[in-house]
Image 1 (tube, rainbow, N blue to C red):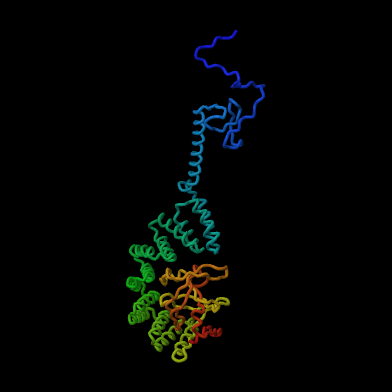
Image 2 (tube, rainbow, N blue to C red):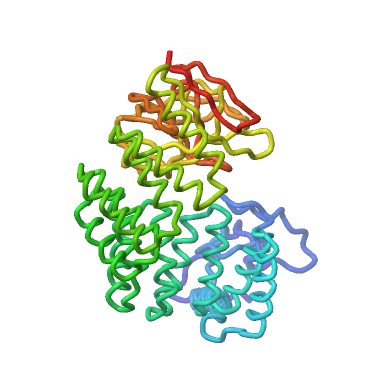
Length: 447
């Protein structure tokens, strides 16, 4: 019997398929959900059987329980946050719970490698030691030294700064940090540390370093003052007297510079270096006879200077007439080296290279000379390892022995192995030159 229709009930659509098909009824191909591949589907729609991956509703119109979706999403989010927190904690665990035993083992290995000259292997072991115990200043201090030895000055400075921050009262670390600043050309930062150490320790060596730093910074008055303080505290150190006389000579105080060296000789009568420095000073002042006397005294006090002194004396004698100069050479394998003075400021060791079109110096030497690199000309140079960029400029003067030339073209390169640069044809072409291998002399005859 047909049941009466209730009031307000919607009329049934006889053509509408059953909302829940019988199990034995053949199923239509589930509608493909738009936008994502089937491989990402995780569940099935309970209405039509289509795969459902979490969208707001299925193509058939079925909507999932919103609360259940949000609960699942919340669980996934919490698991993600917990995983990230765990990873961060493990990564920073050594900071709060350092493993000193493992750090000591790595540290000992690193020091052995460093002592044997295996710097790269030492760096690897230091890195492990720092990872195991990141708050140990002694490990970071040694690590910084190894990095500097390997040429990584910027990384070395960062590590040494960290070591200094971990142990702010350690004078050794502070002094090492200042030296690294010097190597990186950060003389102003180095001066701040040296001044603090000079006051706290009353150590004259820091006053001496301050003199060197301020001399490079071009603050000659301050440099002279700190050299004088050093000479008062270290009167038996000939390098202090030589540096003081040099800064005085730079300021045109030739008489004071001469008096300074003679005062040092009275306190250190056995110093050959003082007599040699006075000889160079007098030769620059055109007092050749007095200069020759000082060079002879230098050779008497230290026979190791005999060969070099012979060349200098020959040059002093020859320069009165034919302008022929004899420059002492040193040997390393098949290479010849000379000592040169650039811009009457920096004394450097140069490789004699007649195959080089121009003289060449390192970037560190250029910094010590306070050269204006902004005015340098960028050029491409061909080296052993291929072509690379460099900068070319002109030096005010180059002096080799007592042979001095002005306006010498020079190339500045980032790094040079084994010496401070090359003595190339921009200097040598102004002379007829030859090598006297028996007497170990570079013979220069003015053209």
